[in-house]
Length: 148
View 1 (cartoon, rainbow, N blue to C red):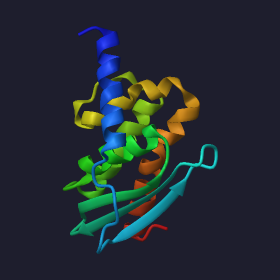
View 2 (tube, one colour):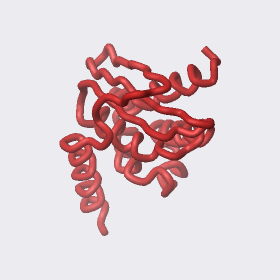
View 3 (cartoon, helix red, strand yellow):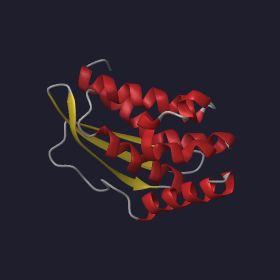
View 4 (cartoon, rainbow, N blue to C red):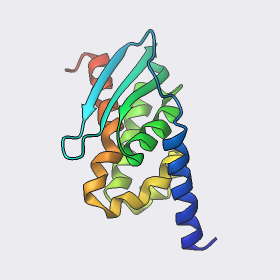
Protein backbone atom coordinates (compact mmCIF):
# COMPACT_ATOMS: atom_id res chain seq x y z
CA UNK A 1 0.00 0.00 0.00
CA UNK A 2 1.41 3.38 -0.97
CA UNK A 3 1.73 6.26 1.49
CA UNK A 4 -1.05 8.15 -0.32
CA UNK A 5 -3.39 5.15 0.00
CA UNK A 6 -2.49 4.75 3.67
CA UNK A 7 -3.14 8.44 4.39
CA UNK A 8 -6.49 8.18 2.63
CA UNK A 9 -7.39 5.12 4.69
CA UNK A 10 -6.39 6.92 7.90
CA UNK A 11 -8.47 9.97 6.95
CA UNK A 12 -11.48 7.73 6.31
CA UNK A 13 -11.03 6.05 9.69
CA UNK A 14 -10.86 9.42 11.48
CA UNK A 15 -14.00 10.62 9.69
CA UNK A 16 -15.80 7.38 10.52
CA UNK A 17 -15.06 7.82 14.25
CA UNK A 18 -16.13 11.46 13.99
CA UNK A 19 -19.40 10.77 12.18
CA UNK A 20 -20.30 7.64 14.15
CA UNK A 21 -18.37 7.91 17.40
CA UNK A 22 -18.12 4.93 19.67
CA UNK A 23 -19.05 5.37 23.33
CA UNK A 24 -20.52 8.84 22.84
CA UNK A 25 -23.05 9.79 25.49
CA UNK A 26 -23.41 9.91 29.23
CA UNK A 27 -22.44 7.03 31.50
CA UNK A 28 -24.57 6.18 34.52
CA UNK A 29 -23.32 5.35 37.04
CA UNK A 30 -19.74 6.54 36.70
CA UNK A 31 -16.81 6.65 39.10
CA UNK A 32 -15.24 9.85 37.78
CA UNK A 33 -15.98 12.54 35.22
CA UNK A 34 -13.54 15.11 33.91
CA UNK A 35 -14.28 17.98 31.56
CA UNK A 36 -11.49 19.39 29.41
CA UNK A 37 -11.67 22.36 27.10
CA UNK A 38 -9.20 23.63 24.53
CA UNK A 39 -9.53 27.43 24.72
CA UNK A 40 -7.63 27.86 21.46
CA UNK A 41 -10.23 26.15 19.29
CA UNK A 42 -13.20 25.60 21.60
CA UNK A 43 -13.10 21.79 21.67
CA UNK A 44 -14.89 20.54 24.78
CA UNK A 45 -14.92 16.94 26.04
CA UNK A 46 -16.26 15.35 29.19
CA UNK A 47 -14.88 11.88 29.85
CA UNK A 48 -16.70 9.58 32.26
CA UNK A 49 -15.17 6.33 33.48
CA UNK A 50 -16.49 3.55 35.68
CA UNK A 51 -13.77 1.84 37.68
CA UNK A 52 -14.10 -1.43 39.57
CA UNK A 53 -11.16 -3.10 41.32
CA UNK A 54 -8.62 -0.74 39.70
CA UNK A 55 -9.96 -1.59 36.21
CA UNK A 56 -11.88 0.67 33.81
CA UNK A 57 -15.02 -1.34 33.08
CA UNK A 58 -16.68 1.36 30.98
CA UNK A 59 -15.83 4.72 29.43
CA UNK A 60 -17.93 7.27 27.58
CA UNK A 61 -17.51 10.83 26.41
CA UNK A 62 -19.60 13.74 25.25
CA UNK A 63 -18.97 17.27 24.07
CA UNK A 64 -18.31 19.21 20.93
CA UNK A 65 -15.25 19.68 18.83
CA UNK A 66 -13.36 19.08 15.64
CA UNK A 67 -13.06 15.73 13.92
CA UNK A 68 -9.66 15.12 15.51
CA UNK A 69 -10.73 15.63 19.13
CA UNK A 70 -13.93 13.65 18.72
CA UNK A 71 -12.34 10.79 16.76
CA UNK A 72 -9.48 10.57 19.25
CA UNK A 73 -11.91 10.33 22.19
CA UNK A 74 -13.95 7.68 20.34
CA UNK A 75 -10.86 5.58 19.62
CA UNK A 76 -9.52 6.06 23.16
CA UNK A 77 -12.70 4.94 24.92
CA UNK A 78 -12.74 1.77 22.82
CA UNK A 79 -9.26 0.87 24.06
CA UNK A 80 -9.87 1.81 27.70
CA UNK A 81 -12.55 -0.76 28.44
CA UNK A 82 -11.08 -3.57 30.49
CA UNK A 83 -7.72 -1.91 31.14
CA UNK A 84 -6.26 -1.31 34.57
CA UNK A 85 -5.64 2.29 35.57
CA UNK A 86 -1.92 1.68 35.05
CA UNK A 87 -2.50 0.28 31.55
CA UNK A 88 -4.72 3.27 30.73
CA UNK A 89 -1.95 5.66 31.75
CA UNK A 90 0.57 3.68 29.68
CA UNK A 91 -1.75 3.98 26.67
CA UNK A 92 -1.99 7.71 27.28
CA UNK A 93 1.79 8.04 27.51
CA UNK A 94 2.31 6.04 24.32
CA UNK A 95 -0.26 8.07 22.37
CA UNK A 96 1.21 11.33 23.68
CA UNK A 97 4.67 10.20 22.56
CA UNK A 98 3.28 9.49 19.09
CA UNK A 99 1.68 12.94 18.98
CA UNK A 100 5.07 14.44 19.75
CA UNK A 101 6.73 12.64 16.84
CA UNK A 102 8.02 9.42 18.43
CA UNK A 103 8.47 7.06 15.46
CA UNK A 104 8.50 3.92 17.63
CA UNK A 105 5.20 4.89 19.25
CA UNK A 106 3.70 5.45 15.78
CA UNK A 107 4.53 1.82 14.92
CA UNK A 108 3.02 0.43 18.13
CA UNK A 109 0.14 -1.82 17.08
CA UNK A 110 -1.36 -1.67 20.59
CA UNK A 111 -2.57 1.85 19.71
CA UNK A 112 -4.82 0.27 17.07
CA UNK A 113 -7.10 2.89 15.43
CA UNK A 114 -5.29 5.70 17.27
CA UNK A 115 -2.36 5.20 14.87
CA UNK A 116 -4.54 6.85 12.22
CA UNK A 117 -3.91 10.13 14.05
CA UNK A 118 -0.11 10.01 13.71
CA UNK A 119 -0.19 12.59 10.90
CA UNK A 120 -1.58 15.13 13.38
CA UNK A 121 1.90 15.32 14.93
CA UNK A 122 2.96 17.38 11.89
CA UNK A 123 0.49 20.12 12.89
CA UNK A 124 1.42 21.44 16.36
CA UNK A 125 -1.80 23.45 16.70
CA UNK A 126 -3.88 20.26 16.26
CA UNK A 127 -1.93 18.11 18.74
CA UNK A 128 -3.91 19.61 21.62
CA UNK A 129 -7.12 18.51 19.87
CA UNK A 130 -5.94 14.91 19.67
CA UNK A 131 -4.75 14.90 23.30
CA UNK A 132 -7.84 16.47 24.86
CA UNK A 133 -9.51 13.17 25.79
CA UNK A 134 -6.21 11.79 27.06
CA UNK A 135 -5.72 14.86 29.25
CA UNK A 136 -9.15 14.13 30.73
CA UNK A 137 -8.15 10.49 31.24
CA UNK A 138 -5.00 11.44 33.14
CA UNK A 139 -6.97 13.78 35.41
CA UNK A 140 -9.64 11.16 35.95
CA UNK A 141 -7.13 8.51 36.97
CA UNK A 142 -5.54 10.96 39.42
CA UNK A 143 -8.95 11.66 40.96
CA UNK A 144 -9.84 7.97 41.22
CA UNK A 145 -6.51 7.33 42.96
CA UNK A 146 -7.02 10.32 45.27
CA UNK A 147 -3.89 12.03 43.93
CA UNK A 148 -5.56 15.35 43.28
